[in-house]
Amino acid sequence: MCKAKIKLVYRQVMDSSSEAAFEKAILQASYQEFLLKSQAYNREGKFKTFSKMKANDGRANSLHYKLDFSVGHFIAQLDRKMPLVKDNLGNKLSFETARFELIESHTEDISLHKIAINYEAPELSLVELFGEYMLLTYDDPSNVEQLQTFILRMQPDLSIVSYQEVANNAIA
Image (cartoon, rainbow, N blue to C red; front, side, top):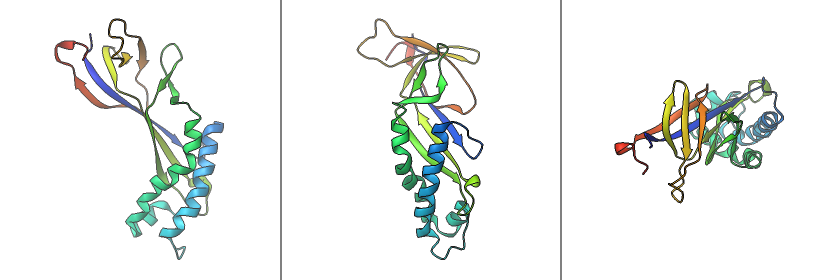
């Protein structure tokens, strides 16, 4: 029996304190792209930070989208598995989409470059809640007889972004 259909998003923030090779590679690639692409919104070079560029020219918000291309191949290597979210058996949670976000940057100081990747899981069925633990299943309409369940603990940076109760707690 299913209580609700939910969507989860995990937000992985990366900055100069990040130590994993994956994070360092994404930071370096996105910073180099920031230096290149931000020139269009800062022709005279008088704005050093992303936030000042946005305040001066709202079109600078497109840098989120433009920098995403520079890190796409790193995200593709994850094989649609979130790098830091695992169920109780150690299996990584799957994701459908990954959205790049430029939080802040500075044209002269890479240590101030801060980004996030928001991983959105496919729709999941919430079967039961046990405190901070959720009993979940991936939706598999081809196999309603025997659903493969897993337990996931809520954790920092993991959010439920969509929640829809299922009528009569039946599998839809």
